[in-house]
Image (cartoon, helix red, strand yellow):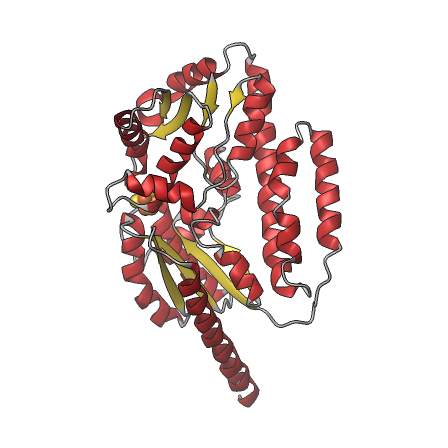
Length: 368
Ligand code: SF4
């Protein structure tokens, strides 16, 4: 079996580690690129959202690289994502690919199905070993990756030499992936932190603070958002992103129920604008905009894939939220027609607007 899965942020790191440790050959598709999107878009209806097209391209690139088994997840939900594994399978078969699709559907399978699914993937591994490997991948590798990426958001707008933080960051996922034990991971973490520490910073530089909100997949895939976080960092903006795989994992690990996640606070903040649930991402876009305005953020960038149902709801509410909470919101709609130059111009204009707002606020404070 040569197993592959589509990309979604850094999820490939714990998955590859899990399969490597179990001795299952794993084909990680090439990082999502213009080619991936072009392939996916070519064989998708135009109105499908970008995650569908990108993941179809990921599957095609994985099959071209020799994969014979594809992983997918299915299930109900408030967007179309739960149906994508099945539609991807149909599209790939029509294109003539020969493969086995392993799809896990939580709603259909429940806990008994999950047990069977895991046993099918790792027939020769004991349960304690599989649980230990999953725990290592999620709570150590994935959590560390997210912590280090959050650090880049703080460092990037303050770096003296442009690109120094990104240069270190680009090496991080491979190094974390190569660390298969807690000891190796600790060593890698120390080395990476030492490299970030060596980046020269201007700690006095005044930076703007921006929340990057919107659709989960777009927020965590730099190709899909046109490296927006790097670009904002270059413009002297500290980014606080709303979507993290580690937060998502915490919900699945039931830490939300222990009050560790602040999801309930976000729902409460969104409640005056959204009286019913239209998926977590839309609630988060609205609720976090309210909370960020209370925390003194300078602005919000809202990421929305073209035709994304939940984010269309959020997009229509955000002008009102922006007015009532006095926080500028830049809506960025993403699809295969997007271009970096156009986004850069919009970001520069947005940063300019936020700087002028900040100066106005500072003057008003001094005058009062
Ligand atoms: S949330 Fe939107 S973009 Fe994401 S999978 Fe669902 S419909 Fe597509």
